[in-house]
Length: 183
Image (cartoon, rainbow, N blue to C red; front, side, top):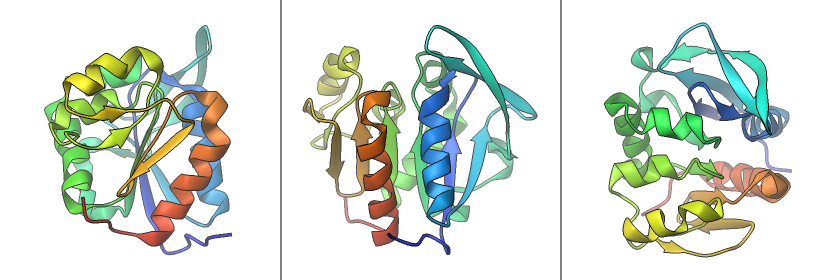
């Protein structure tokens, strides 16, 4: 198993993230030895969405305005319908995500998480997947969308739904272990 003991990973999220899409990658990354911080425009606690109702609250480790992409080796974007819809309206969040893509650092997005990738204007020509309802939006942003459980394109890791989490988590760990990629 890849050791990530010298890696720091940011999970960027807002209220309404899909609970398992944050908790599962976070646990897998920590078990692989990574230091993982939950980053949000909000401070204190933020609430998860769990299938059809509100879920757990998680502590925000660092507010977005107190961190830099330079502090982290990789980025994870959990889905949930509410979470990316809020984040994509936040210029600081868009800049944060854009910096990871620009530097070729691993970026992992699952389910509705790829909505944030659209806002960066940096996915033209990239191959990815997402929750099926985002297919048209991603294609309109210039991406090549395919329906597979996990897709990796030069350090950009995407998956469709919570059912894909095992494959997603494995690829995220593998890509972070490899480091920076040329886009």
